[in-house]
Length: 105
Image (cartoon, rainbow, N blue to C red; front, top):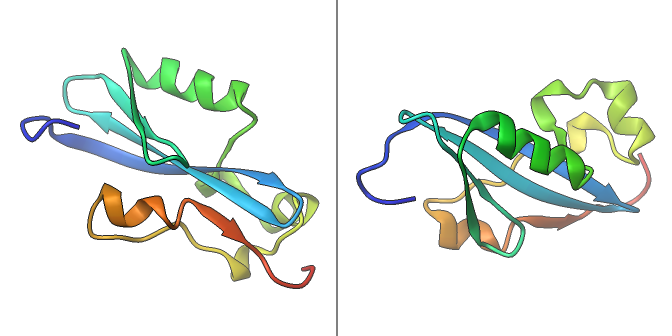
């Protein structure tokens, strides 16, 4: 994201592979465009929030804030054992975008 772009909203998405969670951050910018920070630490621009969401869904990601406990358990984890990555900037998030979970939920 450029220094002049302002974030209107931010949403976390995840995909699961066994006991590994792969995170993606969707930012919607005030201009109406969107960007996704992927698990490799790359920021991918999109023309709209809808196109960014479609790309995430195509890659089998789900919105973290849309999961309930049953959905989480189907994916192999409990909501109580995970939270979205935290960091002071995108570089510090990069190492946290792939999370390996412990014992089964």
